[in-house]
Each structure stands twice: as structure tokens, then as C-alpha cells.
Image 1: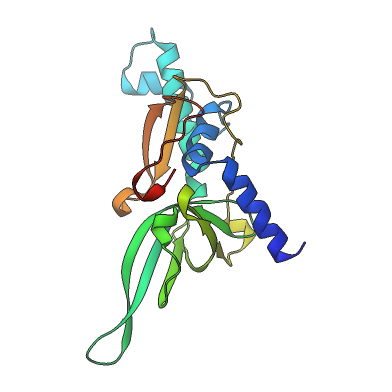
Image 2: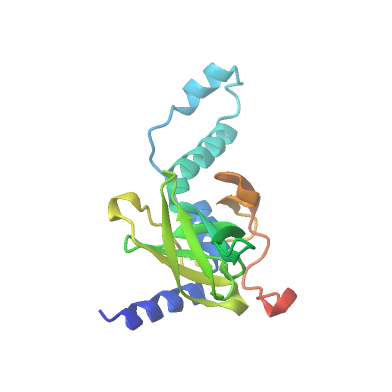
Length: 210
């Protein structure tokens, strides 16, 4: 398939799937992920918890399972700027950082547009995988008004764990639990939870970003 056709296909899909929805909605709405974890009963005994709240224990276990299954799909994106000092030697300095997700085993990585900027001159990108291996990346393109961008890395397919996504809001309901995994302020693979507060809502923020 021609490169341009593949590129358009990615952005058509991203136009329907916001980054947060791809990472959060798909995970929270999916069935519990099978993983090699301790049974809830064993955990309650180990931590001295009451046996009278199996629903809460199962909810916690599901959160643990989702994190273990999907954290490998989360990557750290760094933007670097080449600067030239008085010594006339060019050096690279960090100019931005954020979270991305592995989109496929071909090395496409989805991130926020504000993380990578507009591919300015003397700008380079680095993607660090869950296994802490780093690869140089190139900017394929982006949609500024949606705050979405796509990078490409040349990494072995065996090292890439694509995220599981759900297009649009099919099956989502207000009040459903959400899970976010990312690298805020460079803090490695942080997890937080919330709820679906509304569906089908578009809010234009600062800079015209929807």
C-alpha cells in the first residue's frame, strides 16, 4: 500500500478517536483483561482486607489488570532543539515532552500536537518505549485543531505493543469508569482514574483546539 494512503488512513481514524478516548475509553469499556495476577481472594488475605466487599476488590483488580496490559503501549515522547553556543558546537536540549501511544507494529506513535509542535527547523524527536529503549522519531503529520500528531519510529515489531482502541463513543455511557496512563511531567507510567462525564460534546479551548 502506498505510504500516502497509509498516512491518510491513520488520520481518518484519528479524526474519529480522540487520544484520551483511545487510551481511556477503550480500556475502561473493555472486558477485564486476562493477566498473570494474584486472585482477589489471595490479595484480600495478604493485605488483611474484609471479605465482605468482593465488588470493590474486583474493580480494583480490573484496574490493575488494565494497567499491566496497556502500560506497554504507552511511550514517552521528547522534543529536542539543536542550539549552537559560543563554542560553535551544536548541542541538543529538551524543548518539550509528553505521552504517546503505540498505534501499530509498523512504528506509528500517536501523541498530542502540542508535544511535537510544527516540526520546526533543528527539531528532533525521541520515543522511549516501556522497555526503556529509545528510538529517534520523525513527524508524519498532525491535526493542530484536534491536538493530534503521528510520529514514526523504526523499532522491531516484537518491541511494540499497539493500544486497543474503540472508535467513537459506541458502548460508552455517562458515569462509566475511565483509566488514564501517561507520563505527566516526565513521571514514568502514572495511572489515574475518573468517569465519563458526557458524550458527543465538543469544546473549543485555547488556540482553537477542540
